[in-house]
Length: 225
Ligand code: DX5
Ligand code: ZN
Image 1 (cartoon, rainbow, N blue to C red):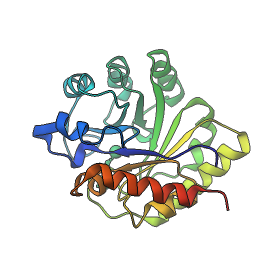
Image 2 (cartoon, protein in one colour):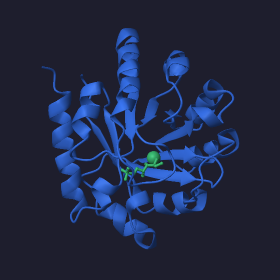
Image 3 (cartoon, rainbow, N blue to C red):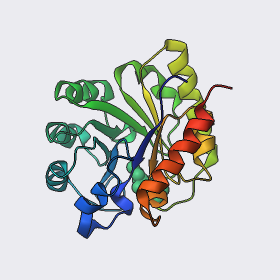
Image 4 (cartoon, helix red, strand yellow):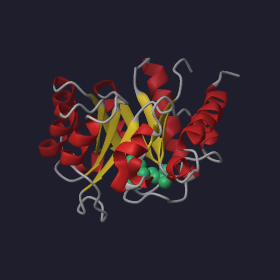
């Protein structure tokens, strides 16, 4: 694989009273900051929304990877692109016309991502790969941090990687859920090249060091044999 790994710590596992500090603590180590937006509707949990993203955007230069676990992304997703998010990912299960929304996001200056939840097969979405910049495979059921990684989801990662290779596409293949030192290598071997990690980064004593360790493991597993 040619690209180097993206490590995207999820601030869902950080201290919400000190988000700016939490982000400063990973500057120079993280590639993206993963921001989990949950609406208590698409998923039962409720987190943060646009005002927090707008404020936090001013506090750091690390690109934002916004993961929208919300219904009606057509209505809300463009606002995150306008707020300066680098990548805006919406869920396939919540979107009627993913190609059209991806276009809108790109027109608003962001990369467009499509997320596939645990119970959704990836096959029907493979044909959409040319229209998105990021394909996010959930390796848990979306909604909560701190869940156990599901290795059976890696079959989807392999399917997507095969299609990206076959069509020579420029798509980031991201995994999210339970990514840690003991799981990142298998995800990388399956073909992922972007890794979200919440608990594994913010649950560590030294978040920046945890990121460096994850990166080293991913790099080694991604290296061509
Ligand atoms: C859960 C979120 C994840 C979450 C991952 O629905 O999408 O990004 O923060 O947390 P960990 O890494 O703890 O599984
Ligand atoms: Zn996420």
